[in-house]
Image (cartoon, rainbow, N blue to C red):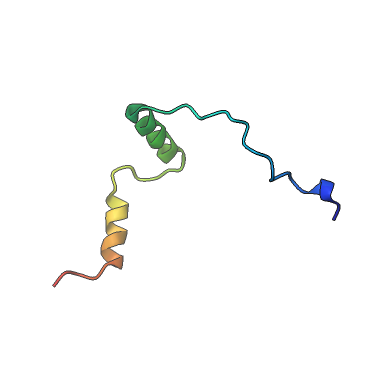
Length: 58
């Protein structure tokens, strides 16, 4: 394989920094992504899975 066929992973980042989001913006972005991925925002499914995985307290 010729060296020109590989992506140039040795380059430094361009120096552009991502805009820092406020907590509200970050929360809205998270919720929108969850909707797109059809993830349960309530946490009910997560809690059910955790209950199945973790042993019961005695």
